[in-house]
Every structure is written in C-alpha cells, then in structure tokens.
Amino acid sequence: MNFRSITLFTASALLATSAFAQDYKAGDMHVDHPYARATVPGQTSGGAYLTLENRGNSADTLVAAQSPAVKSVEIHTMEMTDNVMRMREVSSIDIKPKEKIVMQPGDGYHLMLIGLKTPLKAGDKLPLTLTFRKAGKVNTSITVEEGMQGKKSADDHHQH
Image 1: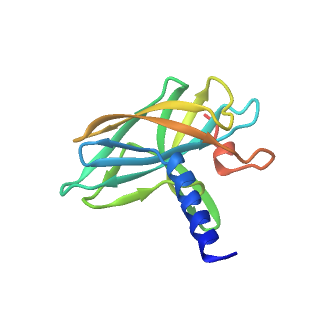
Image 2 (image 1 turned 90 degrees about the vertical axis):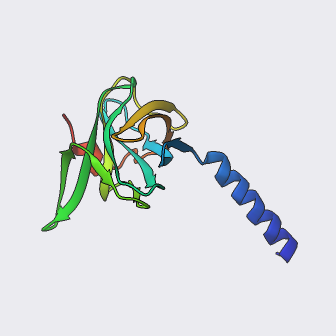
C-alpha cells in the first residue's frame, strides 16, 4: 500500500466514523454517541451508554432520563467489589467543570432501559431525553448497535 492509498483509506475511515457520530448540546453540556446494545427476544431491559462532557466553568448534574420506548430509564453505576459485580441505581450524576464521563458496558455509569416495549434491534433508533439541573433538557437519539446475542452481559441479568 502506498502513501496515497493510506491517505485515502484514512480519510474514508474518518468520514465513515463522523457519519455515525452523534453530538447533542444543552447549555455547556455535550452528549456524544448515545447507543444501546441489541437485545434478544424476551429480554425486558437493556443498557444505554453515552458520553457526557461539561464544557463550562460550573458543575452540572444529570438528574433524569426518559424514553417513550421503555417503561422507565434509571441511572445506574457498576463496580467490581471482591470479585463481585455490583450494580445500583443512583439518583443523579454530578459532572464537574471540564469533566468528561464516558459510559461503557461493564464499568461505571450506564442508563438502564427498563420495560422494553419491543426488542432492541441493530439499526433501531430510540428517543431519549436527558435532564440536567442547570442546562435543562436535551433530546437525543439512541442508536442500537450489535449486541451480545448469545452472550450474557451484566445488564442482561439485571431485571426489575
């Protein structure tokens, strides 16, 4: 592969990546790449993940999340304690000035989608409204990505 091919490949990859990028804003709060994993038939809950970034000079707090695609959305945290994964609901997430919180499967914060009305299929989009104490509400869209079909994740075991 020559330099020109590498340059074209890199440019194509960047364009493809930016086509999937989802960035939403409310005041100083930026929400990037909200996504959920596809679920298996009969699964009644799932996890949603995103990145929260406070680009301002004062703290803000994520206080709620809602979606008409589910019965309820809860803010959860996960942590490994004595080789046991513990998941618990939290009432909010404080985001310090200039702080970035990356939600990802198996570690830290995530949004628990409880009471799915239909299974989540790759390519689906779900509306999600996040409410921040200072920045207010921001409407986003969760993109459903290939999931862990056939594998069990911590979110699969967490039923309400």
